[in-house]
Length: 433
Image (cartoon, rainbow, N blue to C red; front, side, top):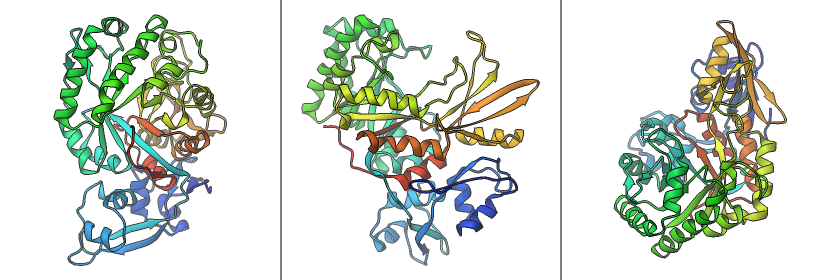
């Protein structure tokens, strides 16, 4: 079908990537890479295929370099990387190779983009994603109860980010050694103001030494009693960091009202934190989650409800929308307290549908793809992200006048997401201050 900003083809019975490529006059190899297709002969009925139509191409001649090609056409290295995912973010080209210089585009506007990534992200995935991103948040720095930082192996990520002009942002959280957000650690640091200076000094030293651009604070499950102190803490960090040229972002639970009950929500004062920080991430994902009932991870109506509340409390130009870059495989029937869903990437989800002979369907309300399969006598439903669902999320940016979007997370392979970004979004310059 024709999307608002690009072609999104929905696979019909009997179609292959070769027949789709012929239909639109594009390269099979490019189509395969742009959609992370494992086997061009095997597609799932209902699978989405994002089709970028080249308008200008270049055949590599002897002596050409990627820099010289970019200069010849008045474009940038990063744009060539975006148009040619086959390059995997590397400048290596060969004689006779066809490079895509320009594609058909109808962008919805210019926005800032970023993404979180664990240090174990593969170099290939990182290099593919970075040309699209203003910000990279290595996940995550913790802290001890005396204000010392728990180190992170982030040097290589930061070095790679700088190659593409992507700004590294230090992510500070209350995750403990069990990978759980510690209410106790957060309560202790928030209620011991004498430690704020110690923590600030350690943050500043690390940011200066490693070349970080900003601070991103993510304290979750704080409870109502910590809400005022959290606002003070963020205000303190901003008052110290802004004069030195560093911005401050704070992550917010997906609330829909001031008095929404629950430990996750009560500790986040939208108005107070929105005023205290330079920018906020509204975590508009995880309605479908590991221990919950089968749902889309980020249903559009739920995202809209949160954003509609958020813009009444925070200047929309300070808001980053959160975009999920993963899905879940749920076993049916759901049993509360017992069921545990498995996380998977878009590529893994599609490959699973193909291997099980499942038809991929699309929920027009949630604006998310899903499919069913049965294995070892157990019925499953898989909710994930595809070109249609990502496009729907990106279209929320102009709808609400937001600053941009941050992805959780970049460790999951999803070239289709990058293809949709390339056709949908112009990347505006990084700016938090």
